Image (cartoon, rainbow, N blue to C red; front, top):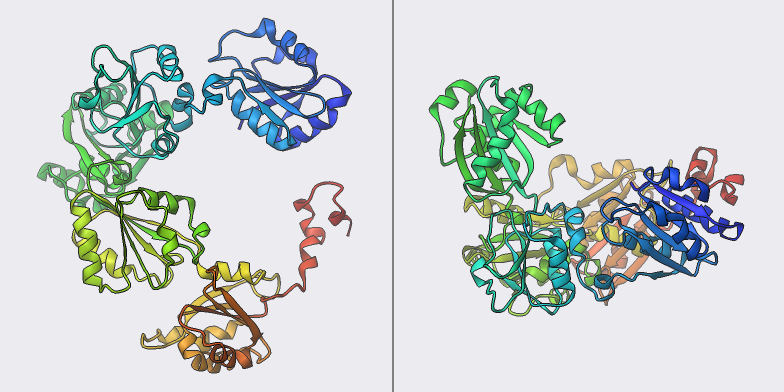
Length: 595
């Protein structure tokens, strides 16, 4: 968290200072204290005349890489101005945040900001991308902001590359290989890759190294030269063209107390993850060792640890033997671009295209194939697909056809989104598909979604957990063609009289009502929610004794959520939130603390 000082130059700005102090957990200091506390804070916010601000800091300014951020707010709170350390010091971003807190206009004069261009000198810190370039950063920035033709090479995919792709300036061209970097076409190349790449002569180069690698290592027993192993690992990986890019280190748990491991954690502040011999032995590796298996109980340490630590990623550098250590490097498949296929199982949410998660939307926009559950997911969710993407409904396909289609695209190295309604983990029918993916060694990941039971609570304007009434939500279904486990029969679950959300059960509502009435009072509130958040959404309220009648009379189908419990529309007991035990939730002086 930034340490921020606020300097109200006159009493007129004191109310603004109080607001910002609370919003940013800042310190209010006097103008006379600025010079002696210049190194104590990350940022200074002056409230008053710009001239006074400038005269106060003029003799203190040294270098944009070390100076704190300085902004100035006029005493009326109309304008917030970035004064010093706009990019590197974070003044531009702080200017926006302060303006937002005050409802003021942000004033930023940095050329790249006003032109909508990337602030190249902030990407290192923003995305944890160390710079490996030899060319001068300022020369690269000058070339870039003057819109000289620029090539962009990205060999990984992370939050930073997503940002670059979404905000691509018109003078920047994405290339897929360093061989496409033609000095006759481009003046600058920006590279985002953990691999060593050399720009052609005549081009400026700015090389960011994303921290996406997972290093697995093995150690000899208590090596005396352990202080040199860290650098030696970098050296041997460099021979493979890999720059220092480790986001974590992994090894076997019996090495947890080795001096080198302590050095990694305490001296270099590296994240170290440990695995048991049993976990490592279960990983198939290209270079197993009988000797290693004899001594530690697993045929591989460094390769297996790298693969496990990278979420079963791709082994980029196989086992290398150094003096008293072995090392390997893997990269999680989610970071690799144009390397191999990937399947993202995405929760579509309850139906409204605006209720898919931000990550889910990004996956849909990136996909080469979108296979969506057409009977349950509105096609409108797929309209964000990129040009050329294949969009298919699985409504008329059996499981074998769905898996065959996904494997066809996967084998071509394509990115596939399997779009399921709600959240995939709740009656999502993904178990068989994951078994197929596992069987064929296909890499996949799950993006969660908003379940329809959450949409039901929102549309009913109800809190499904009421203090001292019901603190449990049960998600279940009635017993139809698919049997329910004996311990999960509805009449047994109903004994708690919790809020119950019943999926996939409109067709057997008579049986559902009969079982629930064995435990819930007949006047228990119920709601039948059809096509939640869809354009044709319908919600019917009533009491439990009339639940079947509500469903039948309105011809409700399987896409109906049945909600049962006294939490529906319950506004009783809410004063408990404002009693003496909850006064810490409110600001001092708030009327609610007086009641």
